[in-house]
Image (cartoon, rainbow, N blue to C red; front, side, top):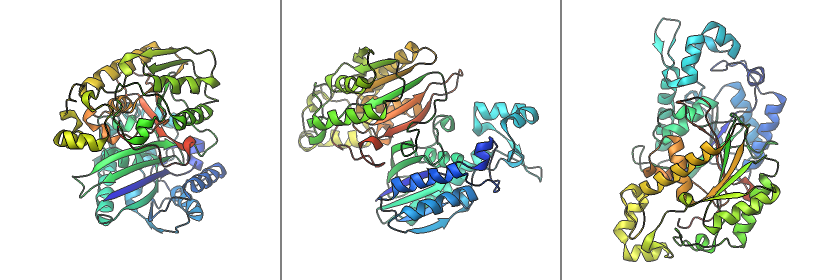
Length: 442
């Protein structure tokens, strides 16, 4: 069974606007701007059939839920769950960051380095780790949800808070190290995960998108560091549409692929881009050239180490042909890609090593204040994103990269801290929040 989870963070609240810690404090309510954000989220979700809504009962989330609900055609049942409450930050609730610096400087330093290590004390004197407890809360909610919907294909809307939503998403992908610092969720951002499962332990998860705010006036999240990379997958080719394995055969964009690149160009029109890099194959290079028509004067640096995976003897073949000639190998590739050496081609670890090398070269090439455009391929982008999420390259199927999809990464300024995936696989410029690009072979 496949379960689609649509995660929405509540709109801008009074405490958000004042820069106050919220936690489980229930005095914070939506601002006028937050209400408008919720309206925008409701409109973009309105044409998706929703089977049920689960919401945090805290005011800022429940208000967001009620606004979104007005726009839904299906009018689903709404369940308010305490398992979607925000992280319990005890005495911190209501304080500003300046207050924390003055009152709890050592604990604030722990929080900023690794939130999972923060320990706090309850009124009865017992100690607890807020984020560790929140991960347990998230797992309980998810297990119950999967049990409830184990016999049907459903779409569930979940409206809650920043920390609990991050924990839910990270739990789905097995809670990678320092994962809490690796992703970002803005007010009324939309994130989507697809889950194929028989039970909790047997789940197969795909992140379709993260932190999509294209429905708001600022269609990309605010830059949070001095260096940013916009990572794009090339537009569609005829072989994408047909489901052929492309690999390193140099197939050009088809007309739809060119239109996807034009849509990405329009979406990124007002973003200041300083440098551009592309795989040396023609489909990403042409995608980059079309995007950069709105940014004249930028020379594209071509990188061989960003080429698509070499599929060897599989290249040019349909999945049905590969299934006929290499049935066991194809099944292994679809379940455990790290175990496959492509006949006459590469394995996913080799692709990961060269792709991450290429990525690091680009990162090291950037100066403070610069934003770079990088256009590459499905497997290449997936191995880079697995690396950034703290996952091994064996987990490439956890990541969706649609043709013309846009991902943003803000590079960390602190040594030992992970770079942050600010948003992932945004395809709203291609029509709606659901990725409807070609689902064919790599």
